[in-house]
Length: 426
Image 1: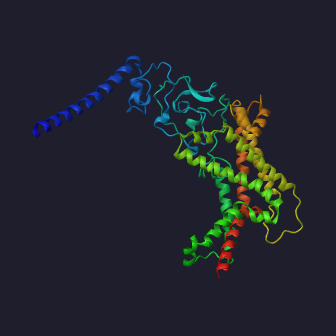
Image 2: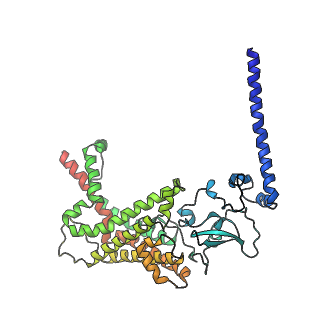
Image 3: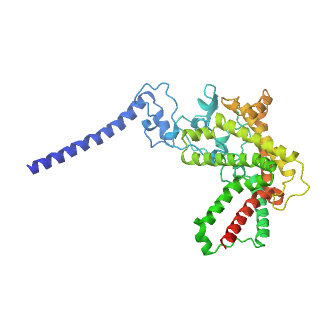
C-alpha cells in the first residue's frame, strides 16, 4: 500500500511539472505569433533594439487582455527608475521617456496634459523604429529639445546640473563639475583654511580627553544639544541681544534652512523612492505647495535683506554680539534672489503658463512681463549663468568678509557651551 501511495505521489508530481513547462513554451510561441500577425515588421525592429531579449508582453502588459489599438505608451518605469537631478540636470517631470529615448523621434508638447511626448513622427531621413530605445548620452540626448527656436519651452543652451552650490535653495546634487562651482569652492576652501589657521593658532579648548568622550551622553552632552537647538538654530542668544537683529537674521536664515531641508529630502526621495507621489510632487515646480513655498521663502529673504541694508548701524557693537555683515553681501544676496525670481518667471512663460504655476505668485507675476517676447529660449541660459555666478561669488567671499560669522558663530557658541559645562562641573 505504501509503495502504491509513493508511486501516486511521484506520478502526480511529474504530471504537475509537465504542464508548466509545456504551457511556458506554448505561451512564448503563442505570444510571438500573435504579435507578429498584425505587427509584421516589429520582430526585426525589436531584434536590433537594446530590449531584444525581452518578450513583448513584459512591456506591453495590457496587450494580451484587451483591445489595444489605442493603448497608452509603455511606461518605462515598470523596469527603469526615473533619472535623478545629476543625470538630467533638472527634474524633467513633464517629459515622457519616449520623448528622449527614441532616436530620431520628434518631441512635442501635449496640450491636454502639459507633457512633452513623442508624436510618432521622425526627423527627415530618420528610419529608426519605435523599439530602438537606445541609450543616448551627453548632448546627443539633450539637443532633441534644447536647440534654438524650439517650441517646447526648453532653453537652447544646455545647462549643467545644479551643483552643491545650489543645495541651500534648490533640489540639487553633491556635484562639483561646472567651472563656476569649481572656482567658487576652491576660493571658499582657501578662505576656510585661513580661518582655521587663525582659530587653531589660539587655545580654543578643542582637545577632548577620554573622560570627556565618555561624558557625551551625560548632562554636558544635553547642554551642548540645547545650545545647538536654541542658540545656533533658533538664534536665542541673538534675540536676547537685539530682537530687531533677530528678526532680520530670522527672515534670511530660516528660509534657507527650510529650503535646504526641503531640497535634501526631495533629493533623497528621488534616489530611493522615485515613483512615490510625494517625490513627484516635491520635484514638480508647478505643484501648488512647492511653488507657493519657494516664492514665500524668497520674499522672506528679500524682506530680511532690505531690512539689513536699511537698518542704521549702531555706534558701538557689544563685544559679545555677532558682527554686522555690512551691506555688500546682503546686496549680493538680494541680487541672487531677484535673479531667481526672473528665472522662474522666464520658465513659466517659456512653458506656456502650465497649470499650477500661478501658485508661484511672484514668479507668475514676473512671467507676465515676458508675454509675447521672443528669444526667451536663448536668453534663459545667460540669466541662469548670471544667477549661478552671483551664487558662486557669494559663496567664495564668505570666509573673507564679515559674513564669515555664519561659520564662526555656531562654532563659538558650541565651544563656549562646552567650556561652560566643563567649568560648572569643576
